Length: 219
Image (cartoon, rainbow, N blue to C red; front, side, top):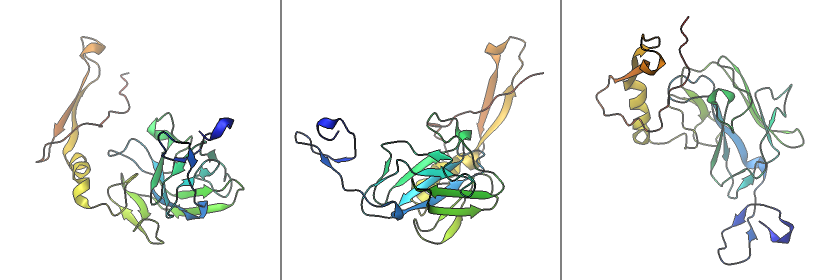
């Protein structure tokens, strides 16, 4: 909080002293760094990631994200008090994710555009994309560069050149975890319903953070 006005803003940590506003960079240092349009197993929904190439934090409040930057440039405004740190990432998940803070639109799994738009409607960054392989994303390699490439393992909020060793658990889940049996209409009623998972790979799998999405309907 800044002063007696009650205005909130990004501050430099000053415990026991008066609050001091943090210097902010310009939105021109922002780029669309990675996006996923065809989630299947690894992530629960599509996403758009913003990267800050600058040396200062940048305020995202009032900027907009859109999958139709030409016809609906201000499709969804980024909420107040949103920032991305220097050389940092900020990821926004699509409506498929079911997140309460997610975007109100999703990316087409076949082809489309992603756009980052300024408060005045000017384009900060935009990029077209073609259909993506299931669970594969597209992004700048390295981060913030003008070179794009396919990422077989998405890296939201991580560098697009994250060493493979740091993504081992994600790869093991994709290659080893399978649904092998579903009981959706047991004679004993709904309390007897179950879903069976099997590890078909050679490595022990850590299921922390894994969720089961969707439902089976019996007719």
